[in-house]
Image 1 (cartoon, rainbow, N blue to C red):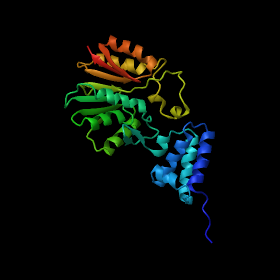
Image 2: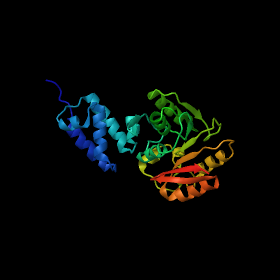
Image 3: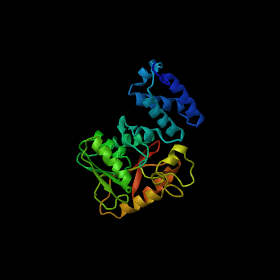
Image 4: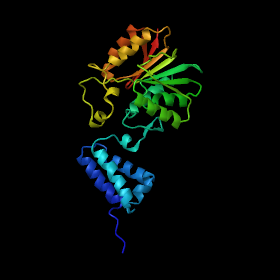
Length: 274
């Protein structure tokens, strides 16, 4: 007589939901379902339609390992090694920030600009590369370059460049130094969270260097504008991401460096050289 296996997909899903909820995961039901459908390799509708499916001991071990990781507030994207950005899946792990939905607005604002073909675009503080790579995929006639100060983060960006079969240069640099410009537009999703600002448990697991930007959160942006002011070329546009209550201060910083605000949407601001 064969030894009965210990769980069905339905019973595991209910147990996982309760365990995540008890751990304070706000998206407990969805996260449990995502883990299950990933491990089964089946779409959500099929998983939900067959709660009676028996889980093998090997699969059960894998599911429980991932479940335990999530109860410790490890971001789901780190567990899955992927995160969706602008309808594409990017590889991510603990070396980079998880791409945020609000950052997608930077792509939308960029696509509204009168950018000529064959111009160079810099993605500064690229992390996973999701912004610059998306711009390159959406605008194949542009030349996008990725920058990051962190060698490990840049390794992830290079994996994503390869994933999407792109010819995109990646430079380890302190913002734009060493300088490979000129660039027509600079995309800058830099660390902007103030030092004493409360962040959730998941964010505390992400690289602090990529999150916090000094006492008021804008230290790295000050450094960026100072760098740019010293170049013998100037970009036409700079796009930034910051918390909405930082926007006026960031606008003032840009104006002091001869850039005026031309568009704002959610966390994103777009500045034009004047």
